Image (tube, rainbow, N blue to C red; front, side):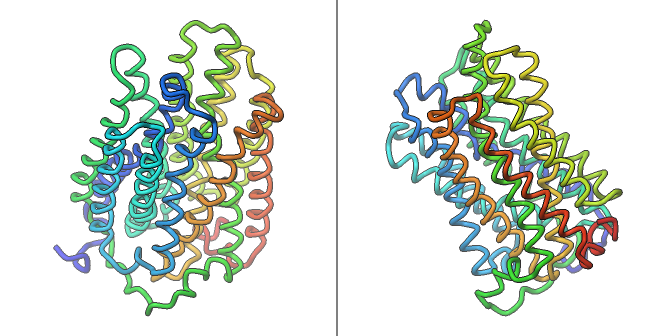
Length: 410
């Protein structure tokens, strides 16, 4: 069946389900090496800079991939299912190839960059495919995709738990690569909800439309504030928890920290789905502002609990995990609703490119903050992003183009 023959509601939830499964599996590659940092530090005496590089190299690759894709409008020029399949295969092979080298090798960093480049053909492409099925439920559909990304990001920490008892840490790399290969199977069952409009004639300046158009710019600024916080928290919360639980003399501190980390990141999938559901009803700017104020507050509070009650830390981590992702899908949904229909893929790619470039900065800054001010205050600067992002979304709410959001619900 050709894309042009699709009916708006034909196979919608079947396609969305398989798309979500494909995203969960493929995006398990993102933190497949980051989840191993505590084990690699113990076995290979991994330094903080190299640990940061393991965390950020995927984001570096993602920025490179999304930049090239945005400048060439690749996401709007080629069949999305084909792009996803090729990128998932490439990422799976690059991730598995890490097993052939020492974790301290520069080649491992290069392979993580290749994995990140491939992610540029998976995450934004998935959102574009979901958008073809949207009918007054764009926030929910994109929220489902971001929830899948969140579960995929959390899954290596669950795989990592296995090696503590009876398996080598390499099972995390093998398992995530296998999941990415499975994603290639799932994506073949995903149809598009409608024919994708023909991409505009090649013009490299189109990539910057997200900057020159004020409503898009404000939506992007909100997202950039969100990204200042998100990936730095995801990358370092596990190390924070291990150090905190050990200081509190908690029995099986490493196992408990891995479980808490998985729960902290994974619970964001619930936040993403719930936020998508209510944002379609009460408005995108409302949901994003509330979520950012809550997550920013958690960034301030969590450090004060360092070395204290594990139960209290768990509660704050779960609240942080829910709120830090709840707004993510709504920024992308704003881009979908505010962009020209034949430029949605490029605008989403532009947004994620700059957002992940910002996340690179904070991922690398956290270890320096730990060294200078300690874990009690290391997450405190992350609150700057969501608070500035809230201001940007407040300004978007007052803009006339906000009527295009969530059917006029802003």
